[in-house]
Image 1: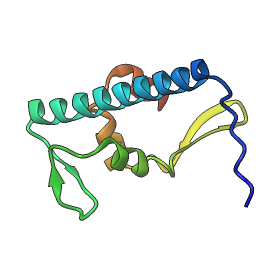
Image 2: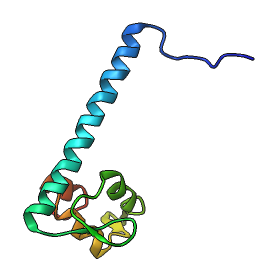
Image 3: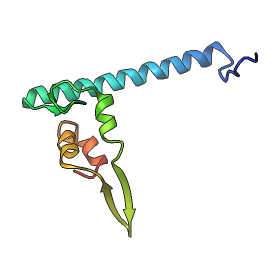
Image 4: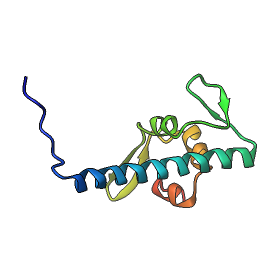
Length: 105
């Protein structure tokens, strides 16, 4: 049986990938924390996978909800496809930078 090829050849490369993964997890955790804090501040909930309201949704679930939102350019006009009212309301709990990405600011 042949061993799979490994692209990381040195310990330094392995440490660099580990550092990048660690930083990604920190950013992910901070985003989820910000969302939960904003929901609690506003005393609001977002629907979870079962459709029930929660003040502590996972960021993974929020990302999955936005998978079908697409940025399109038609005739020089920027448009978003599938940005529903629920998804737009979810964006209200994120920073203006995030809303700007979805052309809401």
